[in-house]
Length: 141
Image (tube, rainbow, N blue to C red; front, side, top):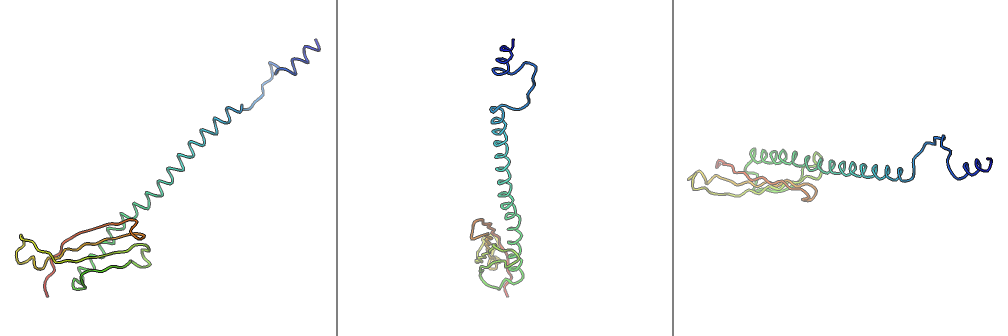
């Protein structure tokens, strides 16, 4: 009887014992699932940050183009365009304006005062660009 108990205690777990814990396979499976979920979350976070920059540019660029157009409307004789940046207020943003005289057969003599204005707003050396073309009737002086 004693020998039977000794073999029983060495070779197998007694039937009435309840040891807690996980097997190695369960731990590996749980870690694999956690890795897949965390990878997806980190990728989603990186895409959110990237999209935030793009949305910021396409929200701000029309406003900056409008400010350059307003500067032209205030002083249309300022020249045939130019380029520059927006200073410390908007670092990394640059502008370029091209003004050309154009004609229209529908406007008749009035088209002598018609100007085509092309505005380009760029961010970080043209990594992102926003283009606007508009026409203005500029009264002759």
